[in-house]
Amino acid sequence: MRRLSVFIEINGQSEYAGEIIGRDSSDARFTYAESYLKNFEHRAISIGLPLEEKTFDSMRTRIFFEGLLPEGFTRRCVAEWMHIDEGDYLSILAELGRECLGAVKIVDETGKAVEPEYRELSAKEVYALASEGATESAELVTKSHLSLTGASGKVGLYYDEKREKWYLPIGEAPSTHIVKQSHVRLKKIVANEQLCLLTAKYLGIDIPESFIITTDDNEENVLFATKRYDRKFVNGNRVLSGMPVPHRLHQEDFSQAMGIAASNKYEKNNEGYMKMLFDVIRSYSADPMADALRLWDICVFNYLIGNTDNHIKNLSLLYSEDLKSIRLAPAYDIVSTMIYESSTENMAIGINGIYNINEITRESFEKATVQIGIGTKLAMKKFDAMVRKFSDAMNQAKAELKQQGFEQVEQISEQIMKKGGIRNMTL
Image (cartoon, rainbow, N blue to C red; front, top):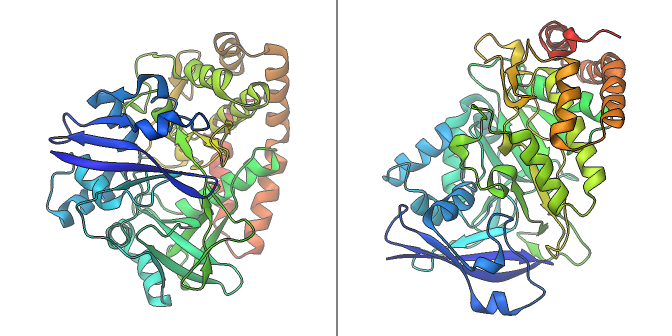
């Protein structure tokens, strides 16, 4: 019988929340601890795992906890190095679960304890991370016992901004940044994402801080660093390896919150994901009206920029330090996929039941407002304002990046204007 302990950080303190018990991944069940339930100050670790139910079946357990793990190539590499099946999420969780996205920590009490520390990365190691791509990041993930969700090669690192040095967090040591590599198949993906995020910023969309790390003169050997919005430095932080340790803030993506498996993160059969997203905001956000409009802006922007990879794991909820308040998290993982020939033209979340970006119109969004329950007049006013300001915002983002030496954004911006949803908009 496998037993994994589940902890969650609340106000900077690790609290025992419960345990996952099962013979294997097929029958593992999560149960809240009586001690956790008896404290009326405690809150559920997920909207999909309410305290009232206490124990959850294998499917609901898997949806939330497997949602903490990397996907795709990184997961396959980790499984190979561990000599286990990549479908064995419990074993992977036992190995990587001490530092996840959000504030949840998974501990295999029978496993070997890993002493937390920050190990400085040499320039050569940073270069390897850029040049080797997902293979190198998967190795770092395994070495550091750190779990990050998503299919692209990424790793959590600690960045000392004053000394401009990077560190690999070991064991339970929290990271401060998520670092992603250039994609082998999708050229200039780093410049693409930074251009899109800065454009979103200039359109008033909340985004995390991000920047491009150059490792040599080759513009393809670059890394994309995003400051973690689920980490927070406070006065009196404890110190580890000479560095202050941030508090963990809890978060969960909408796949976890809605109880939808990661394998179904792309809407296919008119399941109504867009309405479901807004229903969650309406039911759980501390400021539902403001967050509904923020979510609307992200949905509109994904269409205008031509991001058909706008699936439900690329939207998240961010909890306060005491878990008592939930808000929509900043926008992340926004790129223009339409500029790549290999990418699909179908949006991951349908707009009024339409998936093909070439068939979605302003009217599609107008009809969607009725389905998702937000005011049509206000929503479409925001839609039109974003369309009107889009070109200027992209030009501002482009100028900023060109000043930093990333000349390729000129071509990327031209392709976005030709292939993104913005091309269908006339004022």
